[in-house]
Amino acid sequence: MSTEFAKPTKYPLLETVLAYMGLPMKGKFTVKDIADVFGVTTRTIQTRIKRGGLTSRDLPGHSKFLAMDLEQYLHNSSTPPSIAA
Image (cartoon, rainbow, N blue to C red; front, side, top):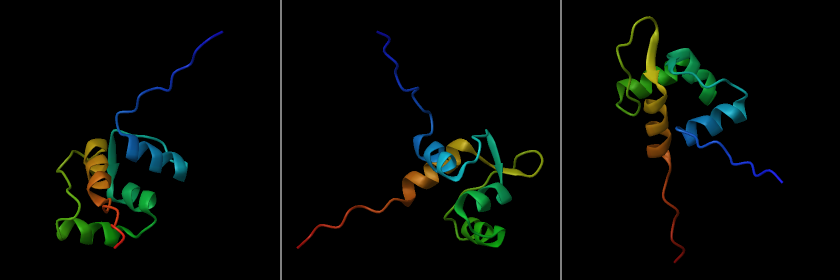
């Protein structure tokens, strides 16, 4: 009897979203990549960067985000459950 263990994930929230959208996990992401992940326009992503809701980096090429940046964004975007009165 073999026992299989689930592979631990480094970025569980990001990997879940990407798997749901059928997109591959990458190390670096562009503004367009992130717009595709969240189903919004590139302008929406640029607005979130400008307002400070999403942190971007000055990476070589067109990439602006690392996987860890997106994992942090997803982690911070969750809202605490409301307490019923």
